[in-house]
Length: 526
Picture 1 (cartoon, rainbow, N blue to C red):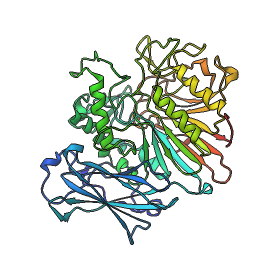
Picture 2: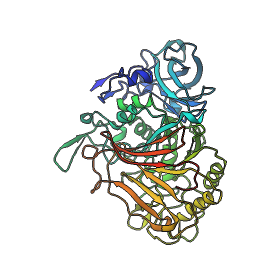
Picture 3: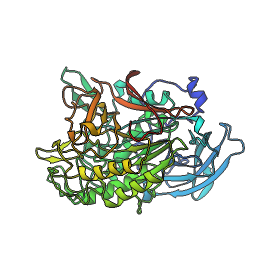
Picture 4: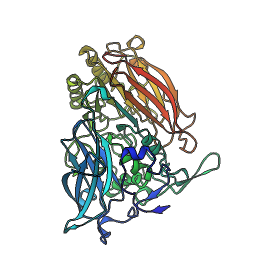
């Protein structure tokens, strides 16, 4: 494996012409294992690459990590030559944010390719600056006819399957990059803080899986430093850095950013943990998440903020990013006849109803980190997601979802589509009141994709409360199938600017389109 930082990123046209090497060869940043405070010779460097997040019609966030204290400076331009560039003076990067920083760039032209580059300057001598690191993104269209196309997936380096140099690293990212989407919706489980990596794993057929390993990924994450190391781990992969420099993200979190199936107030019994208080672990994880993921509602300083938000992507699309972790009630059998907190909490539910009613976008994508009608269990008796296996009237967390679905119907909110992940296979479910125990809602679709770089699992059972019909399913027949044995999955959404039609494609690595569904605009339900 070579040990060099990624080269400055060319424009998209150059990428698509093949000017950037298309191989998924692994190249670790040379400073990956060096503490930034100790790497003080030479000029500041950014071997973890750049990324952009929460891009809208006229704005976006640009992220970087330095290998030492540095001043972050961002330039944006309409051309890769950076002629007539705008300059954005960013924060001083230091240990308080693990030498990461984000800069909001605003006042950008809509529907245009934006080139950006980040320069890191010595805070004591601005003349001593590092080599600029470049990236690009498209702003959301200001006019409907431009159309929108994006990808979604989740579940990254989970179940013991990390960066395998024999496979060329996290190869799904390279396949997604070549599709050149407007953005990537990451539906959670962005790291597996509770999933240590071992150097090798022997597969059932006798082959050996090899992992790139780091000190932080050798155990479960408990300290802030360990959570930070878990977020750095995917950035060791050249595919990920190249993808981040070309495709902006909208990112949410789920359980594995902290610990499997967590809920507020939980006290762990897992012997691997010396810190048993999940609230303490979640606070540390959220700070690391805010440092390493550009999220418009989370200050990179880790002070306050929230994960749930609306990212408005022009007249065709609003993305409603949910947080089904922070405000949920405790996992239980889910048979309560009332549920104040449910899975969203009352404040987030009120926010979601208000923002859905306010939206004027043709399509309202509800980015849910957990599925609605799939029974996801936590142990033998408790329920981890929404559906609890009783096909009758709503109980437990189902009550909150029923309230939301009723609201959408009665307010005649059109164009709602649910996108999710979590279960480590891909499927499409159509929900219809004619099949349901609870019937006061309009029909809708829920599409599942993932994992992106983790183990595959068999399909979950359906719960009949909201009348799901599993129209398509692709899943392994045994648990924790490695990416060496089974494809990884991601979804594609393509909204046509002329007709307004929304096409969903469920994809597998290797180029296969497994399932396609076209939805018509302007309808309450489909």
